[in-house]
Image 1 (cartoon, rainbow, N blue to C red):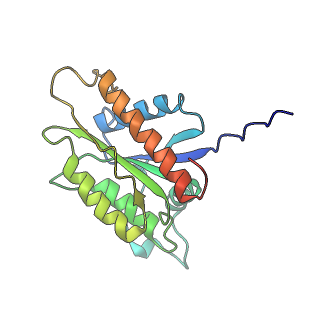
Image 2 (image 1 turned 90 degrees about the horizontal axis):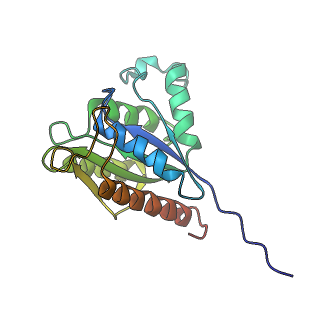
Length: 197
């Protein structure tokens, strides 16, 4: 009797964009990642909007509870197996909205802890790379475990065109690199969970 193949483990990824701009190229990276995930068995990506979150203010925490919009966000992070950040670079660092979201989800209990993570970025010059290094530093304290390779920095303005007028990723080479990031995140998440990659 032939052995049946084990079912492919499903990894749920919460995707967060540090830019709130509708036409953000970094948000375009997440749309492309979600599209690419359809060709990766067992990988499911959900975009999690950080724009409704209020500025972090512990006065909003009442008797150990958070505002409903904050709690809904925290529950999405808690339910995810891993995190995919698209982190634009503002002044050599992560954006204010992204740091705000990170801080809300780090409030007790820290819902980032022991999750795998990956970060991608696009922009001018170094393609947002400095924001990635700061995000990795933040992750150390949060017990977030970032994949080391491959790294993904994309200069959005270097020919050939990387994005269309709606902010959608159109560069095939960049899509291939982005898919490699997703495959690495999937495999690393399984290893952290003690499952076979």
